[in-house]
Length: 307
Image 1 (cartoon, rainbow, N blue to C red):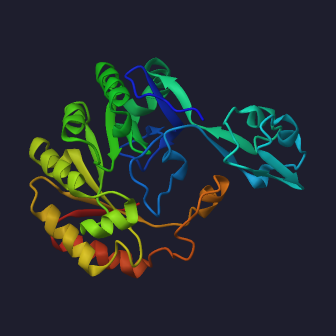
Image 2 (cartoon, rainbow, N blue to C red):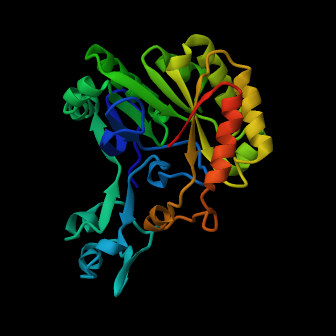
């Protein structure tokens, strides 16, 4: 299995989305970093959690030709009308995906240099200039590849490109502090205020997340921070959690905007990776509930948007 060392010269990227309009102001290019220390039950980008390449199988594209089975030297693919990947045997060599005639098998995660990523971003500078857009670094968790992220941020600054960081805030104070002055806008996720609940549903404590947000709010202006709140029925949308989030952000100076991020089913992504999806029976929040939460935040004076 290929694993990568974090460096300022090379990073692991799993996707690039151009002409994005929900990842910050204007038209944006969003770069998705692979690797995240959290493992949220509802993660919409499960292919961004592991910090190594992964093999995804897109069944709807498969023509059931058996080529993948024939080229696999590790006997990691069974074939009975359709392929089944034996993940424990797979070495992620990529022979099957490179041989697949329909790209039903794809490797997710590519090592990129700073220059390569910057070159991709620069393709859209004209759109940035006309729409007051820029680049958004998302994931995964970009701070997990902090030295690579910092180098990209500095290069963008040199070129006058607006930078947005979409982050969980889960990083050491030293790492977090190192990027603050190089980011124009923070999209900062706040999920659960109770530490035990946070550990249950994300796998990590929220202490460092809350501490870093306090630090950020003291360092930056209100227009530089947008809180993103995932609305997950019966998990994050409870009155107790919403009120706890409100109490916390009300104690901070300089928070003005909250973006509500409604849950939606992404089970297909998990199945493509043969990963267990813990939200199988979860429904999206109702419009009524979203409006109730929106009203709670607005009554406290916050600008609230729903993505």
